[in-house]
Image (tube, rainbow, N blue to C red; front, side):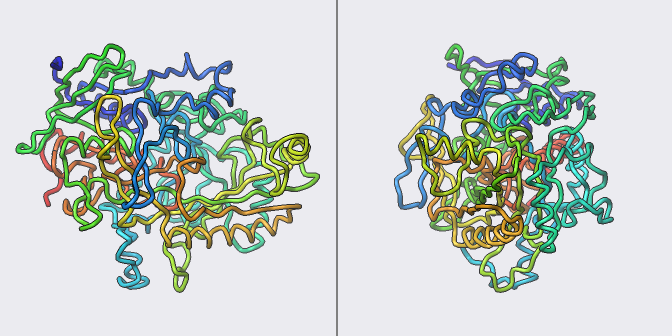
Length: 589
C-alpha cells in the first residue's frame, strides 16, 4: 500500500532542463513545487571538479552520467514485423540520468529552428504541391510560429549565456553571422568562442564556393557572464573535455549551474532524488491527473504524491511511456494511422567525414565541441528542392577541438587497426586531422513510432518502451546530398587524404550518432493528430503539461535543445499567466 503524502501545488517528473525551468517559473508564481528525479543528485561544487572530470575512461567510455540499462531501458527493432530486443548498453544515443539529465553531458550546441520549420507542411505544399509530399511522410505544422516563441528563444539564450554571432538582428542581416536564421530580437549574450585552425580553413573553402560560413552558436561562455537568475558563469578554458561530462569552469550551460542554485535556495521547492515515478494517477472522467505514484529506490517504499499540476519533464522515452501506461491519449496504430501517443518518432540523421593534412598542426587535444564553423545553405527550405527527390536538409560543421586520448585518434582509411602499424599511424595523424559533420533533418514517417513492449519489463515490472525505427528513402537521399556538398568543401581545403561517411542502410543502436530523439507526444492544433496543444497541455488531462523534444512533430536540421528550452519558457508563461488564473483547457478543440 502506497503512503499518501501531502498534496503539492505542482510536481515535476524529471529534473533536467525543462524540469528546472518549469519549477523555477512556478515557484516564482507562488506555487509549492516538488521535483522528482530517479537518478542521483549532482551538485557542481561536489562533482564538477577538476580532479574528477578530465577522465575520458570514466565518462566517455564507461558512461558514468548515463541511464542505467539494468534498471530501465527500451527495446528496439527496425521494422514492425521484427522482434524487438532490449538495448543492454546505450550506444547510438545516451540519455542522461540524475539531476540535470542530458543537460549535463551535452556538447552545448545551441540552435533555433528556422521560421519555415514551424510551418513546414504548409511551406512544402505551397512550393511544390500537396501531392509532392509522400503519404507515408506524416509531418505537421507546429501550432505556433517562430515569431510567437522568439522571445522565449531569447530568454533561454540569456539563461545559458550562449556565445555566437548574430546573422539576422531585428531583420537586419549582419555580416559574419548566419544569414538564414530567423530575426533575433537581441544579440547573443556572449561573443563567439575561438575558432580553430581547421574550422578557419573550412570557412575560407566554403566562401570560395559561394557559401555563408559562420561560427556555430554554443551554450559555452566565451567570457565570464552573469545570467538573468543572477548566476555567474566562468569562461571556456578550451580543455578538450566537454562531451559526455560536465564543466569544472562552469562555462558550459547546464540546469545544475544555470538554474538549480537559485531553485535549491527557494523554500517553495523540494527536490527528491533516486525516486522512480511508476505511474500518473489519471481521472479520465474529470480529464485531469490527481498526482503520481513513485518508488523510493533507496528503500523500496512506494508513495503517492498528490498534485494540482503535473509536469512530465523527463526524456522522450519516459514521457511517452508515462502516457501509454496511464491511458492518457489514444496509442498510435501504424496499421490504421489512428492514434497519437508514440507517433512521429524521429532520430537526427547525421553523416560526416575526416580530412588529414600532412605537416599541418591542429592541436586537437584542446578546444570545445562548439569551436566550429558551420554553413546553413542546405538546411530546411534554405534551398530549392525541385527535382531532388527529397525534402529536408541540415547544417554542416567543421571542428577539430576536443579529441581525447582514447577516442580521438582518427587515422586514414586503410591504416592498421592495431599493433605497431596503428601506433605509427596515430602518432603521424593525431595532430593533423579534422572532422566534419552534417546534421540532417528527419521528416516523420508512418512506420517510425513508439509503443509498449509486450514482453520485456523494467526493474519495477512496467512494460518497456518499444522503439520501431529505420532511416527512410527520404532521409538517405537527403543525407547523401548533404555529404556530396560537404565533400566539395573538403576538396577545396586541399587535404592530403580525406574520406566521407554515409549512413548505413539500416539503423543500428551500437555506434554513437547523437542523443537527438524526438516525437511521441507531439504538439498540434487538433487532438485527433496531436497529444498536447500549443501550450504543451495534454488534450486529455488539462492539468498535465508535457515538456521536451517528445513534443516535436518532426526533427528539423538542428540540435533540439535550444527549442526545448524555448518551449519550456513558452509553456511556463501560459501556465502562470493563463492556467493558474482559470484552470482548465487553454485551447478548445
